[in-house]
Image (tube, rainbow over all chains, first blue to last red; front, side, top):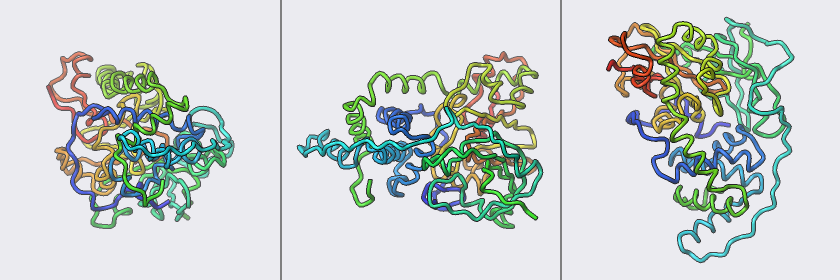
Length: 219
Length: 196
């Protein structure tokens, strides 16, 4: 899904902010926001991938307001999907908290997803052998899935080298949509910066962890 | 959530959500307080700093840490959410590792706590994979041209932490004194550890 969250290589976001040694929560509400998001998957009967997908669906203007804002709205979207709250309820409650006497809509009927799960965490084992080995040249497929994916746009169609074999993991692209964990092999793929950004790029190497369905052999 | 509806102040939205969830028995104050306290006091970069200081003073631990980060970090009691599989990247005089998450803000919570604001900033997430040397310079880290830069985009459940170089002049420092020198920024790779 080609949305605002896929930021790698985008231009126009300005200078680096200051490196500060601030505490995790600058204001009290941020701590509470963190907890709501941290518990949202449990409350909504979903998973971490669905939470990331919900944050990706936060409208761009709200997304850019700040981290805890998009985190909170993402949690709300996921809870809306599971019939835990509605946006109308949240707006009505917010209005009442600020002293406006608005009627409160009735709560929704919960509809938590049917979700096949292989247990806690995201590391799994896979029976099928790996398609790629250390040192293999691989091309990132030209994929643009309609839903959640962990394939950033900036590496699509580019060629790199497998530099590490990572543990097999739940496949975010299917788990986020509750159609199965579908565990996949995972690889660290290294790209030369000039492959990604052209001949005038700063020289450096870029490593990224990619699931097997994202990769094609280079023949 | 529809885009045509008006923006709610984030603090007010959190209050509204918390109040609805509490009413429904899905959230309670003790849980909220406990979570906040954990990430304010127990889970933070002071954990990673202990890992680094031990690696600097114990060559066998350093070897274990680089071979299996998750297990070596767990030896010190650090594990939990966002730490299922942690890889430790060693910075050297000629190789500088730095970590980013372009798609969200993935970060190794058990060793570094929750990410700082700059790590979650669109400028960092967009530019670190495109012009790292310039980004590091803006942060105040001017690397020599002969230092190779390796950028790691945290796109799976693997998490990365940088083992910074031990600063000169710390030969006599104790593990505890060394841990006090190690900063969060150095363990992400946007700074070096300064000599005392």
